Each structure stands twice: as structure tokens, then as C-alpha cells.
Picture 1: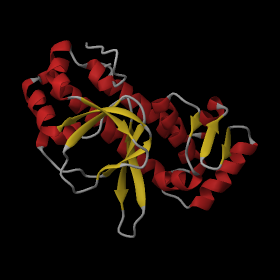
Picture 2: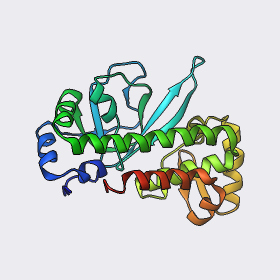
Picture 3: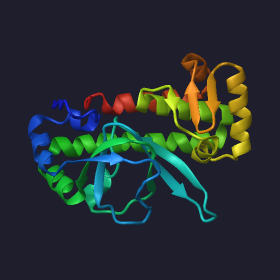
Length: 236
């Protein structure tokens, strides 16, 4: 297993040294700037992004303009790795929702390395399965669970990716991510603040009681985490 002191990305860390060396010459360290659209749905994928920090959201945009999140990645995985193997297009918009840094490389270089490495292909497949499991659970959650449970699940997931309780997020943005109206998030966020679970101000949310937030969340948070741990146990 490779461990690079300059990378917090778990996919890169899981690579054997010889596989990492195939990628190293093509890796470009870039800033992930908040609200940057990395690629739009239907566009050819040109780069793979492997975050060291920050969060990338995968959004499905509807005909009336709404965008709903189906999955997110941070330092635990990457965006575009699976599609890069097929020279394909992006099925979703990919937008930076929390700033950070990432290793970026062109799809041709990543694909060439993957075709030479069974280990890299297997690793990408497991990460893609984990991402698909997250997307499936997100769809089920948004269709079945309360706004409180969905918001709690989303905040817990972002906390895991950022290792921070302080999150620069607006209520309008949170409503978009979980597919509800802003006033629904406002009502729930107010109740959560009154209960001492979170504290919010304009453009900022702070998690004050992680245990209570877990209790408010539905089973989807643990289900996604369990699936990811199972699929990536060998990789990590």
C-alpha cells in the first residue's frame, strides 16, 4: 500500500507504490474553488479529480432548473475515475460545494495507467460501487424520510469528509442538496438550534452535538458508511 505524505486522498494512498509511480508524473495539484462546475452532465469527461480536502457534489439537474444531489465525494474517493476507463461522458454535474485541494489528472493518462494495472482497476471498481451505493441510498432517503432526518444525514456525511463541525453553508444551499423548499430547512434548522444540536447564522452552520445529530438522522447515514467500509476495506 502506498502512503504519500502529500496526499490525504484514500484512493491514492491505497495504491501500491509501483502503481502510484505510474500516475505521479501526470498528477497536478489544484485548488477546488467553491461553486466551480468541474463538468456538466452530458459533457465529455476530461479529468479525474482526487480530493485531498473539500467536497465535490454530483448533481442531477431537472428540466425546470432544480438540481438535486445524488452523491458527494471528498478525500475518501474521487470523481471521474470510472468514466475515465471508458472514455465516457459525465452522467451528472460535478460542483465544488466546499473548497479544498485535489490531485487532477487527464483521463487519457489515468486510463492508460488503469489498463496496465489490475490493482488500480479493481480499486476504481470498488470506489465506483461505493459511490453507486451512496446514490441509491440518497434516492431512497429523499423519497421516504423526513426533512430533519435527511438534513442530519447530509450534515453528518459532510462532517466526515471535512473533519470539521464548522461548515460554510447556507440554508438555501442545504435545501437544494436534499431536494426540499428553503422554508422547510429553515423550520427544521430552527428546531435543531433550539435543541442545541446546531448553531446557525447567515452562511454558516456549526454542529454542536454530533450524538444528537446521529439520533436525528435516519438509517441511511449508517447504511452508506457500512457499505463504503465493506467495499473499501481491502483498499484502505
